[in-house]
Every structure is written in C-alpha cells, then in structure tokens.
Image 1: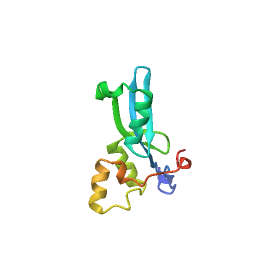
Image 2: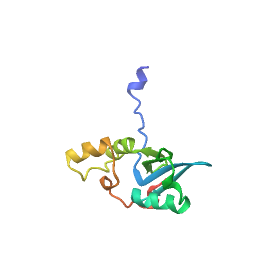
Image 3: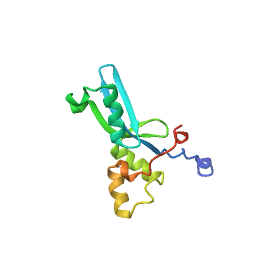
Image 4: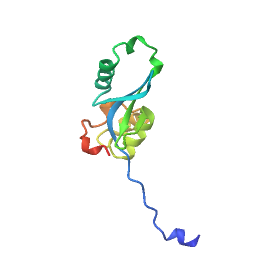
Length: 117
C-alpha cells in the first residue's frame, strides 16, 4: 500500500551475546551451562555430570547465550555480536574471523546479569 512507505518500521532491539555456554543433551533433556568462558561452562557441566567426558561428544555443543537467554552456536553468535557492536574493539580482519566463528576471547566478558533479559 502507499501508506507503507510513510510508516516507519520499528526495528527489534539487537540481541547481544552475554555468556559462553555449553548445551548438553542429558538423559532427561537439554540443559545449558554458562560461564564467562567455555572452560567455566564445562566445569559446571562436570560438577553435575562427572561421567560426561566418557560419553559421546555428540551430546554437547559449544555456543553462547544471548541476552534473551537463547542458546546459539558459534557461527550465529558471531553474527549477533557483530550486529550488536560487540566486536568493535577488534581489527577488521579479527572481526571477519569472529563473525564467521565466535570464540570467548573475541567478546568483552564479563557481562553483568542485568544485561540478560
């Protein structure tokens, strides 16, 4: 319609990456363990499931949590972090790499709990 050109579309707020996370498929369902680094998330997983390391590695995935508490893989996390300006401290080459596959050291952690919605 003609009015659509004059109506400004509201943009959704940009998601941000707030924590490193491990998504683990236990026998009872999917659980997410988070930390400032993936190592911290793994340590939390190990406290709850000490036997996990002997299991099939296909039961867990490295990723990140967003401020909406959504688990995302490293590729999607890189795109989210770039759109949110969380990679602005990196060089252009580092931004390109991080956008393709985010790592904990690419994002300025720690983030405050108040940033998680």
